[in-house]
Image (cartoon, rainbow, N blue to C red):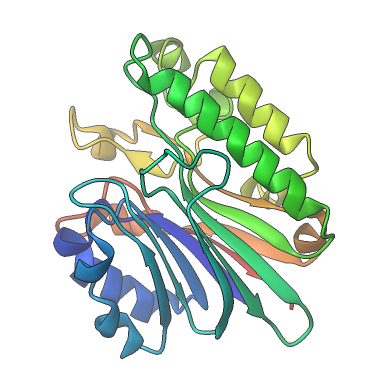
Length: 260
């Protein structure tokens, strides 16, 4: 089974690129972030015609997540538990059945957190604590489970082209790293590093300052797997070539294959 994550940076601007990539890559499940559309405005029928079941948690002009699944969706959860007052559309979870096991997939768009001297950074850290508590509960089920999405976390120096330039950024601050390590300490596996831990494997290149042609990238899109999912991991790849397409997202897809 092929499961992917991609921050598409606007469904209206990137729908043709998304369709082309789905036809090319043929993922069974795709977690999308930053759709920048209300749920009712998401072009679900386009992807249903391609054989996908669609679940959307949208928000006008900002944020927004969706999951496309070729497998029937048996359960869904909209929004990350822990703060009923949080109206930002950043999390969605589905349960699907594979030939051998149920599989839970959480698609997330973790807050950026910049500028760090505003309320945005405490919100990011609080959101990460909620994600930790949610993942802790899911792992107690002892079933294949994964969290896929744009984490807005650069895990280590090897994941950024110029580490020193990012030291004070919300994506790279010590508090962010500590919260991310706390999440991993639950027993989650970084899928990419489990199969290939070489440095310079980026998933995002800014639109400014020639970042793409200079390969000045960062890795912030991750798939974290429960032990039961990690045992089934076959490969993890980054579809870097999509960043060179016309009207690209500033992120590229990351995908895994699981033996289910």
